[in-house]
Length: 49
Image (cartoon, rainbow, N blue to C red; front, side):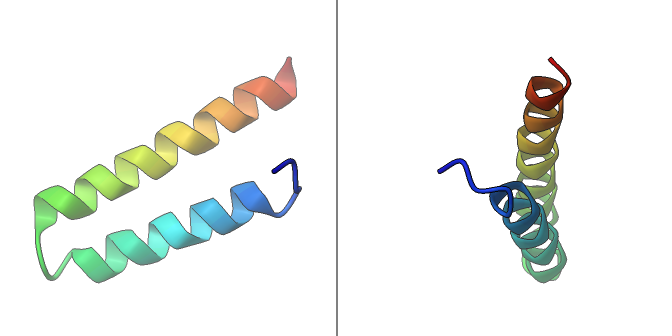
């Protein structure tokens, strides 16, 4: 999956998941947010190199 839309889709899904899960459980919402942040940071670092 080398689609240029995939990182944006993952970021949007992570943001939506964080906002949705915030009302259910803060720890899960933070975990989803951190996982999304980590994924996007890795993708950005790979693009720079």
